[in-house]
Image 1 (cartoon, one colour):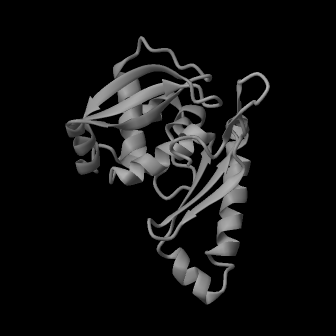
Image 2 (cartoon, rainbow, N blue to C red):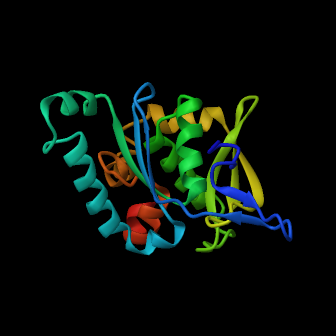
Image 3 (tube, rainbow, N blue to C red):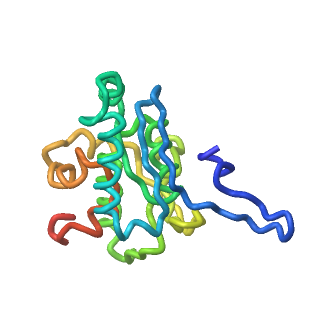
Length: 197
């Protein structure tokens, strides 16, 4: 229901317009090892505070502050923080396709660098849409509405290079790995321009 957007959209019975409800939920899938705190897209400006709060919530439920049984469960979970439904959907698709989200976000940053003519617009985010044959399909979307602006593809081989060459991608990985908020927007909003390259 998250992937098909039926969980958070509702057609107005009077005018037919689609109402979209912003997320403020915790997604937990023990089988897949996912714990994701999803906040509304407009909270991204305060991602540092949100990440600190998410870390505290997770630590209380499954981390250092949790009972032994809960900590044992938490050892099998990958905690994440996202902003907006499209970002949550991307994390679910990433898992479905067996992709590592740190490598995926690094690839997205490389794609952005390879297309300097594409200006960074805070009203658009690059999100994974799925796979088409041997290509990963991405879309530039509105983070609030999920409306798609444009599509771009990258060969699976590009992801394999990023994932497999740890030394070459270490500077980016250090900015993303081991964090609750694993997203290219973290780097774009926080890192010095030299660090992105």
